[in-house]
Length: 433
Image 1 (cartoon, rainbow, N blue to C red):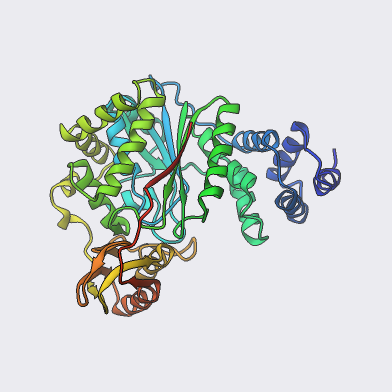
Image 2 (cartoon, rainbow, N blue to C red; image 1 turned 30 degrees about the vertical axis):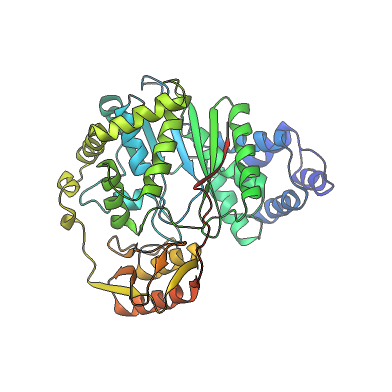
């Protein structure tokens, strides 16, 4: 089999078969296929697309290119959740403890962030002492004993995806639905869960900008999951507005703890409860209403918060942060950004908010960048809200006033006002079962 023939076939818009896709993935991972040929095939896929069968085969080959996590020691139906990313998205910190409190084990491997703010692992590491690089045996043991553990991804989980994504990033072939779907689903399948709940974001702060694009991606990923034998459902959720009020690592952990205490922003609570409910539902614990009731009781009775505390203790973190937020690292510079006019906030570009938080130190501009766990933004006003001139819109946290000034300019240029009320769209825009 020759790579030349595979490139030519896809260049001409023809369907690739299993053997050709496996050959490409296996030989590229072994470094027997040069980057220039892999780039040519990626561009052919980008221009001509892949059908559902090809995308499923590509996903499976990528998932099998490295380790497949074995969760068979853990009893029960194991469910994973994936979000396509957004600003202020900290739902894993909430729904993991909720599901564990309801008897559904959550063995989750998460990543670090590149861009707006840190990933789930960066957020958890803002808890003093919290370890995310524990051995696999300890990871499994924790899930078996307390029902919950969140750790960093292993170095050999779907290595084909890591290699291909780096190539896509520099060859303008990232934004293709088949390549996006196979990238996401290969890692989820390799993570070993029996079921997958997908949160596909849409809007100005998301990778997919329109509802139509997001629904198409969600439908494809659900089909791939089922094709490969994983029970999979998806929701498409709004990211024209940040989720919750906090953007930044320790700030988001605090907000997640508040939700586990039955408080916190309503939008964050709503989405976290909906996702947790879906995780219970595909695990066979009952219908939608029954599962939502279980979720709400786990929070109101304090069992979900206890599971969060158990995880923090098991992974070396200082559990006292749950009651004393002053134990988190504190930003040396704090600035209140106030409105320069009155009216309704017509738009507050979510992507710009994410960029501002990164400038403050909450995210990484390159893989080598370090994160300031204390940096970020807390919003007092969001899109659609009424504001008076001089009223507080947001509080900035950083280690530098220079960074704050730069972030302020970004936010100032991202906000527009209206004299009349602004309609907001629903938080959950579509469900794909």
